[in-house]
Figure 1 (cartoon, one colour):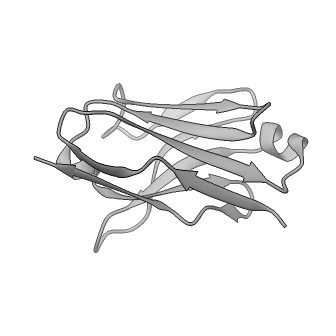
Figure 2 (cartoon, helix red, strand yellow):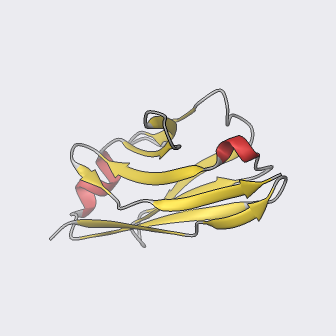
Figure 3 (cartoon, rainbow, N blue to C red):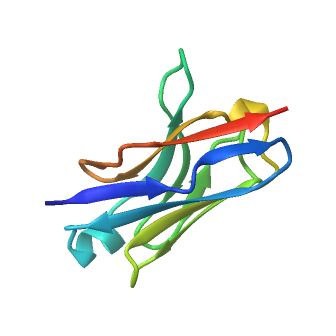
Amino acid sequence: QARLVESGGGLVQAGESLRLSCKASGIILSVFTGNFMGWYRQAPGKERELVASMTSIRNTNYADSVKGRFTISRDNVKRTVYLQMDSLKPEDTAVYYCHIAPQYWGQGTQVTVSS
């Protein structure tokens, strides 16, 4: 059964860094490497938003609010997607979700940034 499991969330102070990981299992390699993948986040009372994405040829795109601070990457051998988050701000506080198109979602990991 296909699964995405996120890890790496936690409580940090503003200005610090976190690296989120999303381990894929039960997903064939061609789907992992060939499909759109992204990191989304959802803060309380807000809609889920796309913060970083990567295409099959590793083109990346970022929300304006995280551009220059967040970096998405993937390791095909480990079938893991990463989100490096630097210079964190309190407004980055949210549950972060990993997604691999078309239908795979992780359960989410909480990121809390204190001021």
